Amino acid sequence: MIKPHFAVTVISKDRPGIVADTAEVLLRLGCNVEDSSCTMLGGDFAMILTVSHPKPFPKSRLVDEFRHLHESAGLVAHIRSLSEEEIKLSPPAGELCLISVYGADRPGIVYRVTRELADRRVSITDLNTRLVGTETEPLYVMMLEAYLPEGMSVEDAELLLAGLRGELNVEIGVRAINPVSL
Image (cartoon, rainbow, N blue to C red; front, side, top):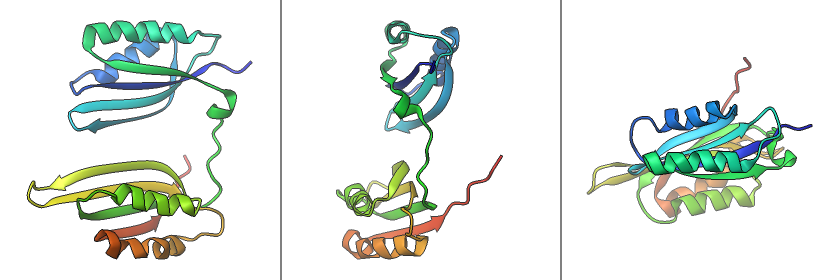
């Protein structure tokens, strides 16, 4: 029997202890955190986790526990049951790379870069953006981790994105990531 898996999305006004409060609920219920990503978004803190339980386990228990955390600490959680197909780890077969984008802030940067990649079947596995610089001279920074499709090299990806440099007035770099085996 496949152990039950859930996607847990948490958001709260930023404060110390959000991760600890979330982890405490999961530990108390006997859940294991298998995968997670956490970040600051403006004045909020956001997390998404994939959790499992070793025995049959109802989603309603997670919902109830997080409802109590919402009432006591203002943390909002959304729980979704995951199917067996959704929990299988099968990274794409192509080359892993890091794509960096830097330039003056303007609408459309995320869309144009990600549309160009999607149209070429590049699989984005992580994306982060930040507005840095000053109020009078904001600088937009976007970092993407992506798998290139079979047959596409890092150099091909750089050429693919070269046309966007002028259109968006940004610098774009692509470099290979060599995963380390532990």
